Image 1: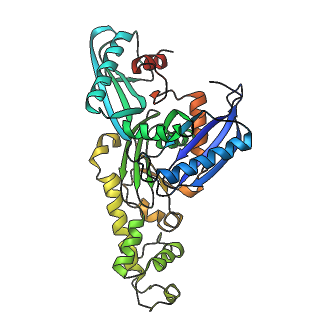
Image 2 (image 1 turned 45 degrees about the vertical axis):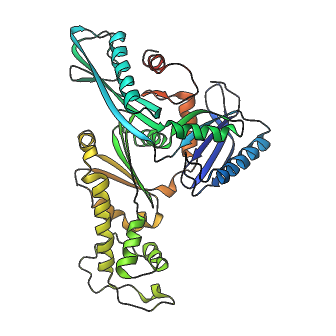
Length: 399
């Protein structure tokens, strides 16, 4: 990696375009030269319906940073937050019959796994590939057990894929600005990196409880393993209260901001919604118990679908009891955090946090760390590198 030369990092999410640029010194420490956040609501990554507006946002942002630091960029690192990213977990094995495992055995497995992905996901490109587990005779190793004797070897990989046409459309967009995307990075992987480092845990679930959608992530042995998107979020609770109690959006928002539902209102039949909430509206007696029950019922349904009754993660649940939940809506975090925790089994370690407290540049900074230092369990990523998948795998595994 070239040091002492400006490097550009760009994150695109549902709300914003986050731009950060900096220089690495000889110790690979990043000196930030410029950073800024731009609103990009309603742009759907990989689709062209809003590309003209989005292009102007990116164009103005790039021009501004280049003028500010007096440097013209030709490349960038792009952080993606796309619902089209798909996770695939796959394993291969090799019978050894009490012989040594060697690099050729692992090559055989990896070639078979690569071909399987190629055959079954013909219209996808690989964003990330992680070594999840190396298992020899039911014993898990931190690294490939080359040279050891055994009967059977299993190699588990986790692929993260994005439709190839989406990648091409995104690349074409930046090509108009004479920029080449050196590397695509999944935002959720960077979130996991940060959590592993701050919480000192390598096996855990992470739930992003957003307003309009939810994400379920799983990390194992420092590898990003699973991702599932749900097209509903905490706003469902607001909508339910509005509909069931016949309240307008403003009143409901005020309720969520001012009333804490951390207490159990089951035995509070006489407590009603205060008249102050009905400004310029006809006052009606609505019990807080009723509102509590509406919110709690929706929360139960949401977390049953995401986690408790999700058959897709049945196997993963055997590997970790740690669940980190980040709540996007600040009022939901402060007023429903205890209610949310009660939706989970007592045997789980539930960690709830307010997403709004996160550094908005965190993912760009983690991307800089990833580019400069790498990540032990990541085998390959989508780059402009023309080396074959297998050659890149082995340059990582056996470096």
